[in-house]
Length: 212
Ligand code: URA
Image (cartoon, rainbow, N blue to C red; front, side):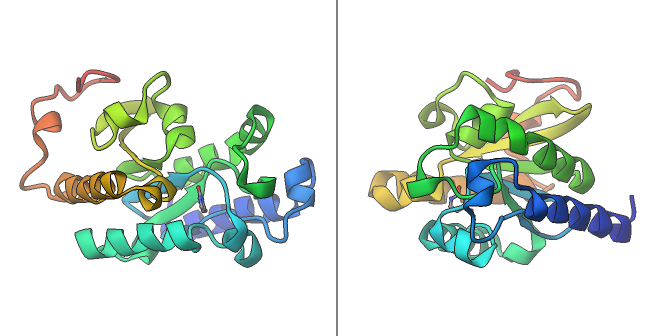
């Protein structure tokens, strides 16, 4: 797909999301939040669901936790937020920032899967447990954060890099330090001259769970 075709397809998905009225959270949203970023991004960040500031602006990760995520990304890796693609599992704000429910996740699944398919990032950074569970079910974030692994998804192989949600990092210094350390690991993952040890010795084929 050319970059222009990707832009058109991503716009089409965003329009579908914005006109969708099939969930209470969609009908009650001030703005839907489809996601934003570079159509050829090497890295995709996937969070949980929009919060209040995201709902009022229609942009992902622009509230307090989003600012932490964007700042840590740039300070640690020198990558600008415009160079990555940032989105969420659920595209509309759940009331009072409650967890998204299974129906909401399932209803929004196809849009996210299509966004991934269009962008074809090298690395998918999951922020928090909901997006981690999409690719790596049955694990605990405190055990696997910062550990990249290959996952075949929709017939394509991606590096999944589980990270804490920045809201958790804002709640505690320990988690904040680990969150920042994980961005440092992400930086090393991007450096082709020094791939991290966990990935170095892996065979080129499949892989889920093989990095442990
Ligand atoms: N939290 C998320 O998971 N996503 C956002 O876009 C904002 C806060």
